[in-house]
Image 1: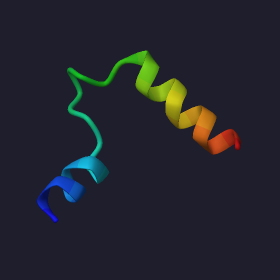
Image 2: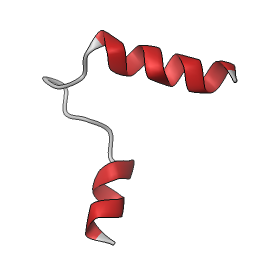
Image 3: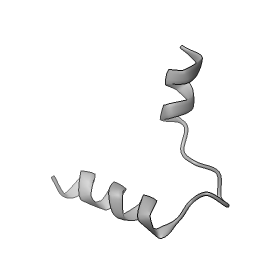
Length: 30
């Protein structure tokens, strides 16, 4: 379950790139 939880946890701030937000927006749109 550790890997699964890690996947659910959002990426750290330094790793949070515009691409990440785009993916979230795309998922929300559909």
